[in-house]
Amino acid sequence: MAKNMERYQSSKELRLTYKQLRDEAPIDLRNCKSKAIVSNVLALLESDFKGANIFLCYYPFGSEINLLPLYEKLLAEGRLLYFPVSDAKNHRLYFYKISDLKKDFHVGAYNIMEPNDTLKVFEYDINQNIICITPGLIFDRAFNRIGYGAGFYDRFLSDKPNIIKLAPCFESQLLASIPSQAHDIKMDIIITENEVLKGDKL
Image (cartoon, rainbow, N blue to C red):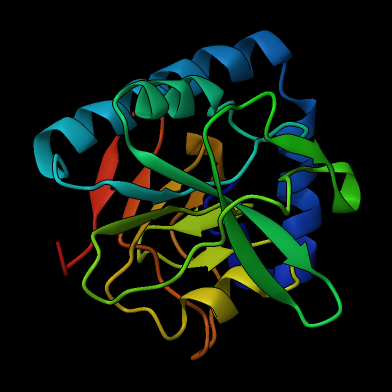
């Protein structure tokens, strides 16, 4: 598919197109690419972010990258992992600290696994070293992101400038450019199965 197709498609059309492309990719191929992405993320953390201790994560759903091996590794290293619960009414995210990838979750909104709300809630501190592993449907080489359309992450990240926004994605989700607006939050790092892109602030 042409890299510049985003020039004549709206964000809504792009979402539908690239969601379908990702869904149609063979499971074995997605799993292979997921392993490569996890390896690239771990290598980056080892080289650039040894001091990062707090990770805001998301639970993989459907054809998304399988990041569970990454989370298992981070937990084994004693890192603090938080996962989101979506407040659909107010379009907000709340993150809860988990210690077990099986016991600490239930099926939540949109059939996505969510952490139990009895767990400790994430409290933002500007002095903390935090990495947000950010989901999305499409990204570009200017670090723009198109998510799923509800704006949860843009709202959550808009007033937290010190959080490092790390976006894992399949290479097929990375375009030359995509539509963006002033309120859209740019990523700091994009990691595919083939490459690692770092933004200007790193």
